[in-house]
Image 1 (cartoon, rainbow, N blue to C red):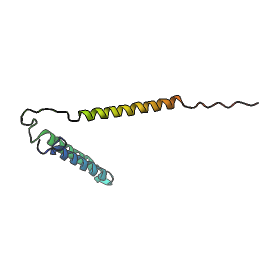
Image 2: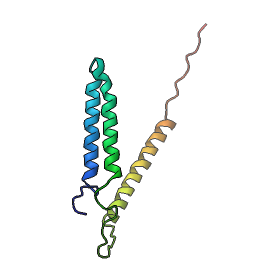
Image 3: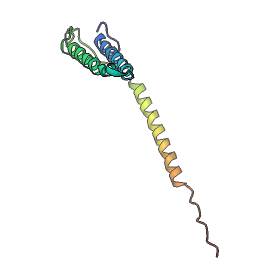
Image 4: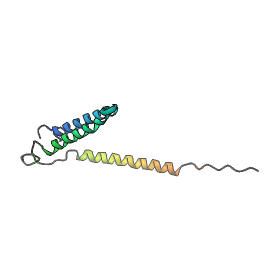
Length: 115
C-alpha cells in the first residue's frame, strides 16, 4: 500500500481539504451582503460536482494487486485485555460510588408546626 496514510490514500485527503475549504468559503460568503451572499449555493454545487467526479472516476484499481500470502497477527492482544479489565474496574467502581451516593442520600426532617 504505497502512498497511504492511516490506511487511506491521497484522494480522501483531497476530498477532506476540498470540503474544509468549501465550508470556510461558505461561512465567509454567508457574512457578505447582496448578491454575493447567494453565491454560497454555487460554491456548494461546484464542490458537489467535483466530489462526484473524484468519487465516480477513480484512477487506481479498486482492489490491490495480489501479493504473497498475508498472515494476520494480533500484536495488541494482551494490551487490549488489560485495557478492557481497567475500563471494567473503573465502570464497576463508578457504579458502586453512584449507588452508595443514591442509597446514602440524606433525608431531611420536615419542620413541625407549632401552634
